[in-house]
Image 1: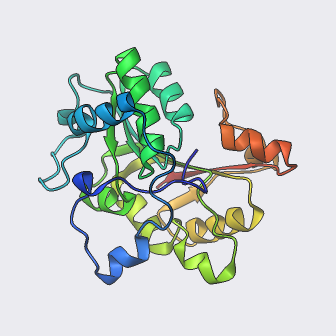
Image 2 (image 1 turned 180 degrees about the vertical axis):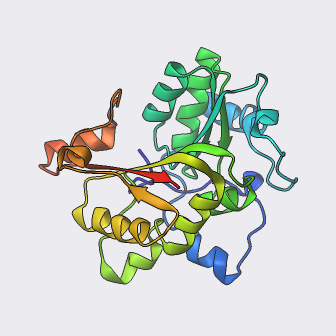
Length: 248
């Protein structure tokens, strides 16, 4: 789930401009883009269904995100790095009146998502199969009600910390696309990344961490379905933290 340790972006056919500016380099995805070869049906869905659900970042963003869906959603949520899609699919099924955008560059994770969307005819998910940075810069200001970043790659070695997705620049991007009163949720089982994230969110004046006691970040959110990566972390003795911030 999230920017897990094996995920990576999509093939060239679905990538937008390969911008090499300093801003894009700071937020660019790092990691493997493909795992095992796709099965025939997965490859067909990747070629046929993904273009229908993908956001066209080469065009101007719509003034209202409702234009991306076949109905008029009451709310809009973004999950950055959905991995195998367990959490995003759970949320989409439980909240049919919400429009969801899922970002996942790892080809195999996207293929799993496409298979479920196809089989269940899920209507309220749109997809982005490349670096989330481009998506954050494309989305209209104050357009989202929530952003979820779950079990992002912690890049534990100090020399790799600059690769972490949570950065001051990206926190500013979150603030731009979230509505006033909207929520940013972050989950991780790596203490150093939790601390890293807290520092960067707390020093941004646009966000408020409302935790008052330890249980506010040690206990999962109501309705939380868990993820495969979280289960692995728990088996290995790592305790997750669940951070929630409000956009002021």
